[in-house]
Image (cartoon, rainbow, N blue to C red; front, side, top):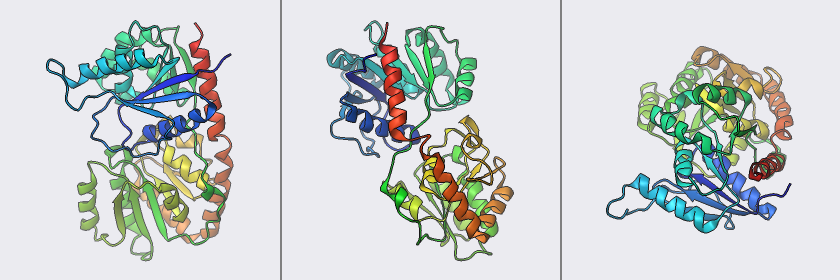
Amino acid sequence: MSKPEKVLFVINQLSGGGAERILSILCNEIVNRDIEVYLCYTGKNNSAISYWVDKRVKEVYCYGKYTPKGYDGWFYCQYKLRATVKKIKPDIVVSFKMGASLTTLQSCKGLDIPVVMAVRGIAENVKPYIREALQVYLDKLTGIVYLSEEQRQDYHQLFNMSESIKEVVIVNPVEFTPLWDKPRINVNKEIISVGRLHPQKNFSMLINAFSKIADEYSDWKLTIYGKGALRDELQKQIDRLNLTKRVFLPGFVSNIEEKYHEASIFVMSSKYEAFGNVLLEALCMGIPCISTDCYGGCAPKEIIEVGVNGLIVDNDNQEALAVAMKKLIEDPAYAIQLGENAKSIRNKFELSHIVDRWIEYLSYCMKS
């Protein structure tokens, strides 16, 4: 089975987010396999690129800053993407996330090029107008990549899937960092979390949970890395709880691996996750981790064995989260052992292995 020589990936933008980070990692590794990689953005061009992209990956912008008279942004984007596909002539097109997938299927109609959709979010969050429009084009889809079997089942309940669609489950990879092999000796008395400042991440609950133990452990702090619409609201909550000098919202940082390495505890407080990328990254770094039992595609219970390589607390339960944080603070030897045990999952999610699966699957989808 011959591998593709030229792959075009499509996404709205690369300005932060788990799916965006994973796509940048995949592109950077696939281009190392002597495959020509194009990365097309269908979103507005005014969003900064948050993740490093190898210079060998050819980036293309398909949303005009100024659209010609008679076009709106959406239709002009379709026009530019279709023209891009016809010019590049990729062996296969892979779209990430629902909006970009709809645009891709509309743009590639009749071009006789296989199109694969990489599903990232949970099914119940797909907007009704996207679902209705996408259903019309699903028979033109060659394949779908899911993050878990549970996610695949959820999307089958949402859409009428053609039996001809080639489906596969491929988990997200974790990228090796030299910090994995560097001992975590001088760690801060710091609990960290990472993600968009969005209701999904439930950082308000995390802040409330920390407030319950803050007085008892006055030399500990909480830092939440990420940007989003809830920043002002969360800051007001922090001020109201008199935690201004104990809880910090520094925004998005490009060196998040260093922050993992320096922290004492990692918490994922989400209400739901299709795939907890940040949890996986923290576990691989060897940090003692706590996660809510959030629902979605690849649930934390599929990654964490409670009491062995991490802790799981009930979803949206600030009392339980406070107890778990207190347990790790008071028993550092136990916390360190959890972190050491967590490192064993590195092999399962190793980047090279996951990219091998992607290339094998794309090759399969290219067959008529």
